Amino acid sequence: MTIMEVTGVLEMGPDDVLKVFKNQGFEVQLVDEMREPPLPPLKDVILSGCPIGREDPAELPSDVLSLRIFECHNIRSLSDMPFFQQTNELRFCSINDCRGIESVLDLSSQSQSCTPFVNLELLRLENLDKLHVLVKVAEASIVSTLSSQSIPAIFSNLKSFHIEGCSNMKQLFPFHLVHDLQNLEDLIIRGCGQIEEIIGSEEEEENHKGNGTQAPTSFSLPKLKELELWYLPELKRICSSNKEMVCNSLREITVVECTNLKRMPMYLPLFQDTHQSAPSAHPFEKIRIYPKEWWESVKWDYPNAKEVLRPWLKWF
Image 1 (cartoon, rainbow, N blue to C red):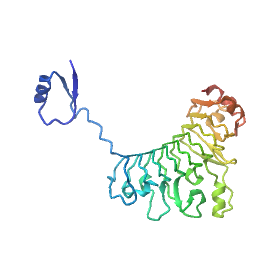
Image 2: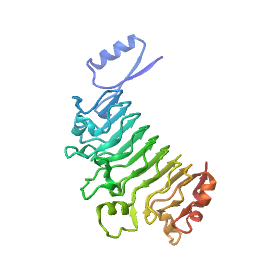
Image 3: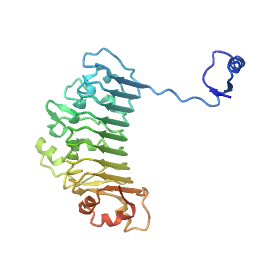
Image 4: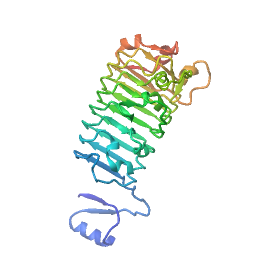
């Protein structure tokens, strides 16, 4: 006998529902909504193959939580879409296979703002051939070449960032944006064939600003738990050579086919724990590597890092 579970608000009384479905051979179970309330519907907008652009009159609800865009080739940036500026509760954003996208946000005009991303937690970018910068802040310029313009916090609530198949990216985060990544937990970068560095040099920014102050020697991504780097043949550095990246929560590292990467700048609590009796509050889980020759040649800032990490080392 076929069994069907019926939930939701019923237009007919329970007895009438039972009668209708039993006459059709179904065994019916009624669920008390007061006892098991359903989850609220996700406010999700999906745009697929839409010829949207700057003049598009479409509107989005201001409280949309999820925005997914597929194969919309006319837009150069989310900022091109007038309705995007109206959203302020966005938690998840995914952009896939949009051939015209050059930046995720365009703040080069004073009329544009980053308000839609103020609550963003998950950002996923895939197969965006023309994407060359996350945030454009001036004509023919990116954040790292900006002189004295104040950039608001953009990714301050971001927890997960996945970028894949974006072949025109050379630098992922200008150093100025790193201070907005204090809640980042997962960073996954795959198959971006031209990317050379993950985090830009603060010295370059200071030179462009004409500021000769000494840059700090370390910065922190305190909540980063997982770092994955896959098939990045041009990747030369994670950050500048005089910087140490403190990752107090990092549990998983994956590096696959990044053979031009010569230095691992991360400092982990695990290194400090070798000199202490108390274990780390964020225990390390695994480090996955390919090829083995890369692991043998790569340098860590912490002198005994490879020996410390050996128990967690896994080969692909």
